Length: 113
Ligand code: HEC
Image 1 (cartoon, helix red, strand yellow):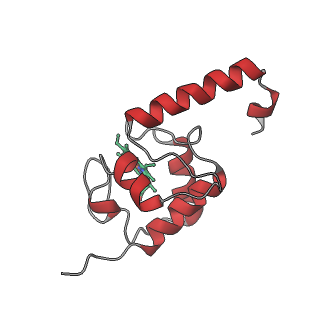
Image 2 (cartoon, rainbow, N blue to C red):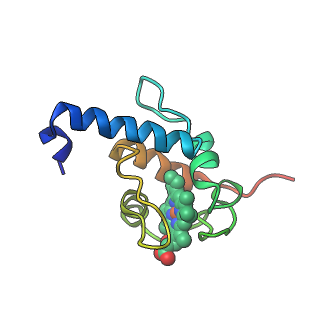
């Protein structure tokens, strides 16, 4: 769990550089300094490739709106991904940020009009 803290500084720097590169490649929005995310933008950039219409519709991945799964399942799926289906985002986002994403998913409503 705390493996980041036991990494050497160069390894941590290297890892965060890699994260930046990966985040750029996925056109994610970098987290603002307060650690909170613009989840809607992040989702559109990073997850929208597979979860269509902000998670409201199925794409390569399933529809997330009205998911029957519990919060722990959603959290863990985002964190660890699924082999051959969905990338893991545990290196890109903190647990608190993943919780924000789960909240976003829970708050999804069909678009008006
Ligand atoms: C490369 C395509 C891809 C990307 C990118 C992706 N997902 Fe997924 N996602 C999937 C697939 C496929 C599944 C279904 C996995 C399975 O078979 O259980 C899934 C499942 C999920 C689930 C569980 C839903 C359920 O009911 O089983 C959640 C939550 C989820 N994704 C959130 C996200 C979030 C948040 C992001 C962006 C940070 C993201 N996904 C990015 C493909 C993707």
